Length: 136
Figure (cartoon, one colour):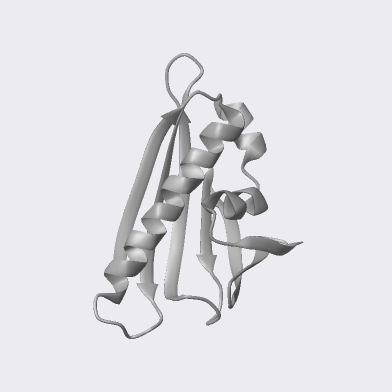
């Protein structure tokens, strides 16, 4: 398993960011998948996402102000994927956003986890870029 982290200070208030950070928006911001459906459960939100030849459920939870999500079940590119999205106000109405993800590729490929981490890092950076573009 590999872990990757992306972080950036954005010209957006924490309140504006909080209002924007819905599970479907996060999935779309990462850029690899489109949202098929969103289902609210008592303790989580399940987003079913799809891409070329892939359909996977992602389970989103709020864990004391941290957005935590994981690939649910065995459908998807990873045998394990979990992500933590945190943000905190900094100076002058700006907000530091940090997204950390741990991944393990489902396919038995040489350097598979390294490839999965590289791809996942691109998705996290893409999410930060999208947030900055849409809210900045």
